[in-house]
Length: 379
Image (cartoon, rainbow, N blue to C red):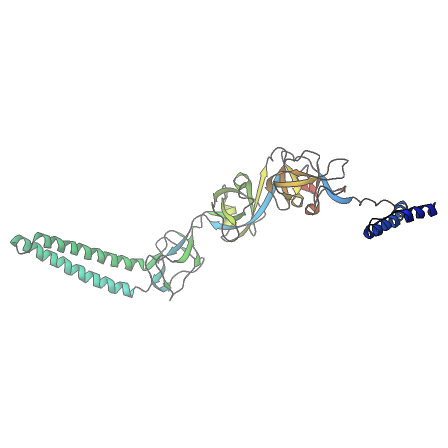
């Protein structure tokens, strides 16, 4: 057979040397390929990747989700006070923490320049008034025109107003308390030159206090609908009920938080006596009555998809993941409440950014950071 094949090859007329070389290469490689294919085994598929999943169910109607933010005890009414005139501070008459009465002197400016200005203004006012009286008598004799007399009267009125203004500056050189309160800060000292209106001292009314807290951006939309309580360090273990009184419409820089002030309704005298301005508080925000179909998941389960937020779901008896869009309802410290997941879904909880729908996976059931979805508690 081989001799006959070779004879056929010798008797064949090759059209070109290049085609002759190509044909010989194919004849040599074909048997090798057949032999190699018969001896090798088929490539094994890659093993399934294990993923941590949790089976979720809607939260109960009584589930409560919460978040805490730091706060501080502040006065309901507080003021930054400054002089109505500029000058150099001559005396500081109070200390921080001192209780003062309305009208009590707090600071005094060096008013020597204002007193000299008052003397000059008084002399000019007296001269203008005397000239006006003399011209009034000359008008009746026709020696002075009525127009000149009226101009002199206007000058006398202007100088009298300048004198009154100079007298007022003398009074404004002493800074007095606008109400009964306590001094909370001193912002300028004796010898310092201050501008008109520059805050030099802070006061607060001690009778009514509240809690101030900075609310993060992700919580500000729901803070008005949540129940608020406070734990004040150094004032006992009792939780104080709070009511949102004021929420800043703009975020502060650079933290991007919104200042909220919470009133303390129904605070008895004993509890009030334990609260001191500046005490640190922990404001606890919680909401009851979760939305229908709300699901609590670890925050690590969320995936930023092109169309919004989603999670990886592994259907029953399946080896490939499916991306399920969800709607975020609220954020907590380590968890997030979402809607749009059917009950019983198996959700991947960790490593979600490294997954794709083409991977073969196998489920490893876990509750995800100790989260109990049926009751909203942690194990």
